[in-house]
Length: 132
Length: 177
Image (cartoon, rainbow over all chains, first blue to last red; front, side, top):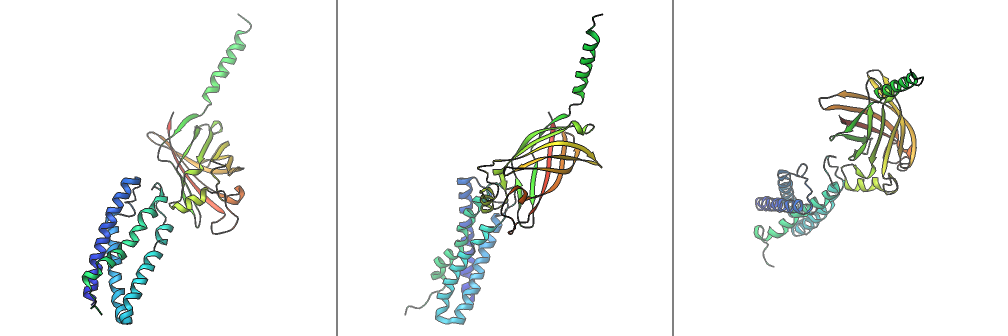
């Protein structure tokens, strides 16, 4: 179980990271706001991967603990945590050398949903439940 | 000899020598830093301009008349910037600039001390602070630091999370005009 969940976490984390990089590139070309000093490519990939792996651990624990209700609780928690994590970029203080800090949340906030989005999209490919 | 010759000569010498006491004018160069910090808030003002006349040998003839664009405040956080520009803090729509004019500059120890009027948020108060001037290949760098009480200038509400005492750190590279 954990092996499949971990694989799903890694793949969805990587996918979220790639989506984050594409989005950051688009955001830069549209707004000319370069935040690569604080949200570098490596940090975007690493944080997305961390989100995916943490999701795998959480999913495994909740599925073992709550059995059939585990996935329901996990999905709810994953969405709530992703939403609550929006406070981080809103409150984040950038180096004052960076212009237009007000554009920073606009770049990072969507990225906070990418790991959950990738997980929910890919989950049926990795963990199948028998049809009742 | 015309009776006006010597008085005219004296006036000419006095007028000419007066120019030797005029301090050198300096142009503010890129790379300046106007920072502020307290226990909670901190940041920089990104736009700074003005006239600087300064002579190391004759500080009494020196003069600073500088302005900071209050709307150029950057705390590193978009929400804080918006809040700082609002009428509760700097009210940049009504008071777009922070203005400092020196009245007296004297030698103090290894550096100098300037006394002048600082106007923030429409409130003018006398402010004295020490500063140094270091010559460089291209001109020089003024460096100074002082503390202001934000409530003296009616910036923000008294109390709250942001300390009353705000430290200002200034570093201004200049080139000769």
